Amino acid sequence: MAEDNKFCIWKHVTGILIVTLIGTSISLLFSGSSSITWNHIYYSVLYSLFIGSTLWMGNFSISPALDRIFRRNPLPPGDKLIYSLLMMMLVSGSIIIFVNWCWFGFIHGMDFWKFVSQGSGMSIMIIEIVVVIIIALVMYAKEFFYSWRDAVKSEEALKREKLALQYESLKNQVNPHFLFNSLNTLSGLIGKDDEKATRFVKQLSDIYRYVLEHKDRELVPLDTEMNFVENYISLMKIRFGDNLIVISDIRETSNYKIIPLSIQMLVENAIKHNIVSKEMPLTISFSMEGEDELTVKNNLQKKSSILLEDSGEWEKHGLLNIKSRYEYLSQGVFKVNGASTLPFPDGLDGYFIVNVPLIS
Image 1: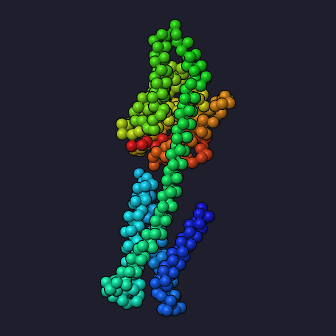
Image 2: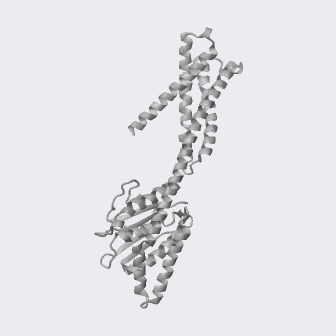
Image 3: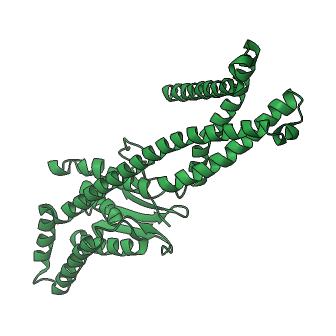
């Protein structure tokens, strides 16, 4: 952080010195060699430093100001360039008029508006505007290029995260253990409870249908995702019975959207990594925190030993994938056990808690 501050200060100092040097050079160039004196050079440097520093800081504040104004809906690089140029003209014009009024009218006691109307003052300000436009175009063109490059990188990163999440979801659903457990449960039902076996097959097919239909979508309505989660939980309850307890306290959700499969994967994670038995039932709860946050919570009773392929890799990569996508798509904060940055804590007061931002 200290190094960033030093770099920022050095950047401002360097920029102001360069602008002052350019202003002084232009002033001396238009003065003519015969009228150049040390006194004239001194006042040219002071004037150039005065107007150069104010123009530099004024224009440098435009981009951060636009970022704050459009914080919730960031501008595309092209639109931001247009807004920056319009703001540059407004800010630079105001600064040039104000600084010249202070310099010629207040400090030197001249009739500023008469000085402007006679032509020399107007010429000075026109030259300054032209110089500012040239410098600003170079700066904003550079910023536009970097913003466009970063936007392309972010889009590619999102695509990679999305593909990774889709792959992880499909792997969790079709991996041999999931199929083995599902088919084993189904075989136990056939001949003993044909009605429950039929319902099991239907729910299993609905799960695969949802995965195939929604895996390529960026967002789905929260109602749709929760209906799918309920179907998935019903399938799990056929396997675990009353040992799996699910509590839902979710209000009207029609106005919210969510990343598809994300909630289901949190439920899958809870079941996979915790003991689910009559002696130690697993409780998973869903609740709304505030107006735009969904909380998924389960009691912690981790298995003493789990398969090597499931040894926490999903928690490291799957949660990070979901977190990255939510951060890209919304301004909300994705938290695991109260933390929004890595490493995530293992638990919070005996629970595993994930706060998912909802997108309106």
